[in-house]
Structures are given as structure tokens and as C-alpha cells.
Amino acid sequence: MINLPNIPDRPLKPRESGLTMVMDKGLSNTEAQSLIDSSSKFIDIVKFGFGTALVTDDLKTKIKLYKNNNIKVYLGGTLFEAFLARNMFQEYCDFIKKLELDTVEISDGSIKMNHNDKCEYINKLANQKITVFSEVGYKSSNKIMPPSKWIQLMQKEIEAGSWKVIAEARESGNVGLYRSGGEVRSDLIEEILTKVPKDKILWEAPKKQQQVFFIKLLGANVNLGNIGTNDVIPLECLRLGLRGDTFFNFLKT
Image (tube, rainbow, N blue to C red):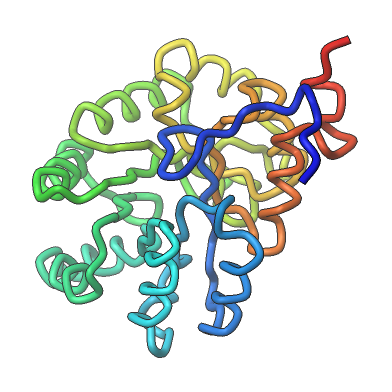
């Protein structure tokens, strides 16, 4: 491998920043192995999107494939909400334990939940030595949250025990952080960053222009999520200035 100068340093796994979270929306075990073969060193976390974990055959084998390659695995927050909407929090915990998962996502994007209750769930799981991601933001484009509310919720969830707070965008990239056409709400993001440390946030950014925005704003080691399985290596090239969109960001002239 040729070492080009002026390429950003990327911390080795397991890392605290520069995370790439990939969404698995139903890959077969063969497809998951192919993803690992091509991209495992660039993937920190795999999320089984929405409720796919309940309808995926041989899920334990796929979980083991990822975990054996130093990739954290968790179930989509929508599945947590599906259990909670049925008053089945303990059954959810039992399901996590059965799957031998040590990472969870706590969200309230679909159901109404008192925020103190949400923080209690975060704290309860974090105290069991489980790595908690908590998600902030609405899944509907009809609901707009002011920046002060984003900041308040993120701060409280980090205080409750979240390892990272996820800034909502869905896999479509047109809600929460983004306008309906996918454009970045840059004023919102810049205001959040005045109060919440950048390394504590994982920004959902499924679209290339969104990834480019965050890399230009926060550098190669920004935490990005909801990355498509075919976009892992293209994203790594963006991080390293090896695509036209970020080509001049890291060159020293």
C-alpha cells in the first residue's frame, strides 16, 4: 500500500470517534460475510434497521459474524419502541440477553414517552454495563424541534448514561437534521455543537451530500450513521479526501 502524504489519521478500532454505523436492513448471512470481507475495518457498528431482527432467520449467526470482527451490533430503536408500546420492557431486555447483545438503542421517535422515563431506561441499561445509544429527534417531517430542545434532550440523555446520542434523520435522510429535500439544517447543527461535545453525537447521514457536510464541518473523524452497506468504502474515501467532494480539504499547499 502506498502512503500518500496529507491523508487524515483515522484511529484504529475500537475507537471513540470517527465511528461509522451501517444499517443492515435484512442482509443474508452470506451478504453480511461479504460486507465484512470488503469493509469490516471501516465499520464500527451495525444496526439491524427498524424491526428486521424479529423477521430475520438465523439472527444469532449473523450477530456472531459481526461481533467476531470487532463490530458492535444493536437492534433498531423502533423495535425497542414496539416492545415498550406493548408494556414489554422486561421482555425486550430478555430478548437482548438471549441474543447476547451488549449494545442497545433507546428512542422515542414513534411513540410518546415522558423524557424522564426515557432517561430512566437509559440509566437502567447503562448500569447493567450495556452500551447505550439514545436517539433524539422526530421521525416525521411535520414535527420541528427547536435547537434548544435538541440540546436539552441530548444533554440529559448523556447525563443519564448514553455513550452517544444519535441525531435523527431516518434512513431516508429527510427529517430531523434535514429538510424534506435532504438539505442540511446547518443553523440547527451549529447551535447544537455550541453545547454538546461533537464526539458524543452520532449524526445520521445516509446521503452523500450530508456526509460531505459533516466531514467539511467537523473533520475526517466525525461520527456518522445510517450508512448504506454499499456506501462504506465510498464514505471512507470521503473521510480521507480521496473523492472530489473533499479532495482539497486535507491537502496542505
